Image (cartoon, protein in one colour):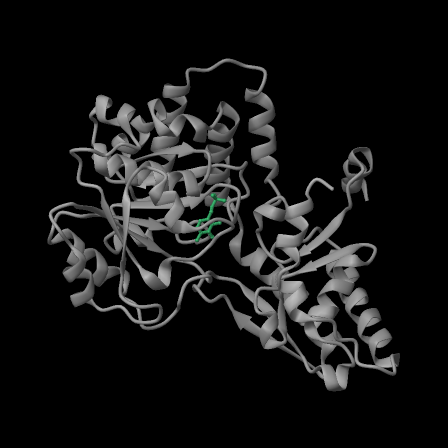
Length: 399
Ligand SMILES: *Cc1c(COP(=O)(O)O)cnc(C)c1O
């Protein structure tokens, strides 16, 4: 496969990604339209402010926003939007951050939304000098708690949409926005991985944030969309704390191209192709001792399904995590979606496959499960050790 030449040249391992759109795996397959546009702009000069205005129209059209701009990442978008809510268009205040003396600087977030996307959400808020004020308890938040947390220093509220947040017991966006707007508080929605580009603004958000490098298939970048004054105030942070979150011409052009390609994409055909992969894997797994394979919808209602694979170690002779690890150690490496392993299950995500890779995944699953069944002992390493393995690896990086 021509696509692995680059891996050979770099001396890195090729992988098959059935995990999802992960920064740690190189995000997404960048769309051909994006590659073409980025290659064309790279050797050229262009006025970046003008390019950002062009991005603003594309973002406004697709997101139903007044305006928008492109930054380094969605995470950067959180920091810039919070900073903008605090400073407005005051250039001197922008240069003083993270010193927030004299500014309203309290930012509300439901405790059940204080998750990690590879770094803590609340850190992206604190980076600006803002003070995070958690609302409610881990799995319980009500309007009275939100209203009770508001003070004369409250400036913004961050709302996170993700499979990583608590999915019940919290305040719906419409009610959250209404309560905030009654007290002149800006609502910033982190919708990094959501396909719905206009729904969060329509349901009351003042700012909605997306990643360019996830479902859109752009370069690594973040999209800030929303109310004009707040978007401008966030944009102006490029002359302040946003400098270290700088996006280049390639990221801006890549985002415009990705948005325009998204409009033209045949979403139904893609869904059909994904469904063929899911059914193939389900068919391979069905009837195998100790293995259940169920097609499940995306937890945040993105129009995509995954295969949930539950493994009973007693019958399969291997734990779910050992199966994951064997798949990822193999040749080719198959990386599954593994954030729920303590429930003895993992997921197969069909969104990031090159044609034909679904068959390799099926064959690898078959081979590893057959091998495990032949084992006289149950293959079961320590889940605790695995859980702490990443920290141990990082302590030694780069080796
Ligand atoms: C991926 C993700 C982020 C981080 O996005 P980047 O663009 O990679 O910084 C933030 N929030 C959520 C909910 C995410 O899924």
